[in-house]
Length: 491
Image 1 (tube, one colour):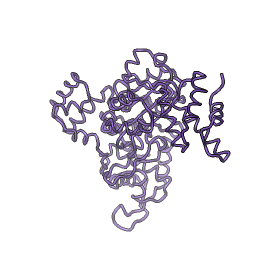
Image 2: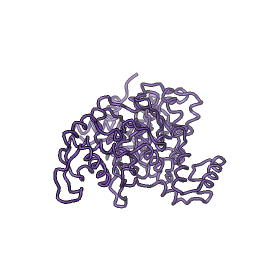
Image 3: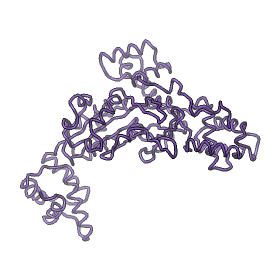
């Protein structure tokens, strides 16, 4: 068995990894102090001003003349530096060595370059870990083309294979080296979504493909810049989900997420190729720690399938490591709870779970070992529902969600504008006479409310039907009658 000092699976967290009870603002101020961007006196003055005038800490630092816009932007746009020593990784060298040993079980003979591609660490760090493995006779040199370790070919010994197998029984994670919790917390704060400001003209441009009321457009800018939870409600079929998706696409800039975290000796995978979209390569982006993935700001949406366990760490008893919760994956982006009120869990139960995170931007997770730790809750949470908010939750909780936007039925003029847009996008000539036939024969005669989704669905039926019968899609009485009969259920 290896030396006792090489085992750190039950290693306690260092103070920088556990920050229970601190607010997001406190940690931001602490980091600015630690990096000597501001002084203690300046921080104290800015916090005092914040109590009086509100706003973000950065805004108050700028107002007092302690920082400029450029300095704030630089402070929150840093790339994770490449660690050149095991200490700079935030990991004990034995943890890196054990991960490398697990990789050798699948690689056979390997070079330092091969291993660097797997664990995403620099040669200097890998060399230190390999020295430890060679000293304990877990890895041996099989050959090389020179005297430098970078030219060597390595291979696990039988003792190394046996120990690697034992390690796999403890945790089957074999991937890039994890980052520690403290580094993750700091990176989330630097990339905070709460510092995002979207100009009004950009919002108008993003929503130009929709017919949307002016008062709604005016609300969206302040809402996006608030960093607060948003409640979008109104009758179904009027664009709540589309608005949420457009807001997600509006978020500027790219961020970094780690492949995995280590907390209390346990592994939590964070990067999710299904949820996270890698950012396009950028020649201006400097080299960075490859344990992180550069992605677009996350847009995570969940609907009726949401259950409570999705909001906690998901431990796999076979692989013996965790998958991050839904809200961890959404950090620095948007989390949409669509069809709120139609989940398998009660709305009040979900909101009670998030009282502290919504108030203090901190969530709490628990490992199966019983250890509890704090994690950033840094995202715009958007609740979308077609149920009246007062029927879902009590007034006390609604007050916690300051921004509420109602998306109502379109007016007749708006409906016509939507109908024309849909016709144009499907290359169907708009016919005023046929449009009036639709309105008078169905909506007004039957007393049916206009819905923003109706034009899309009616035209879609006409297009599909015409394609099947090899006809040109047109607005005719026959086509409108067929689309309406197919679309609406007779009561």
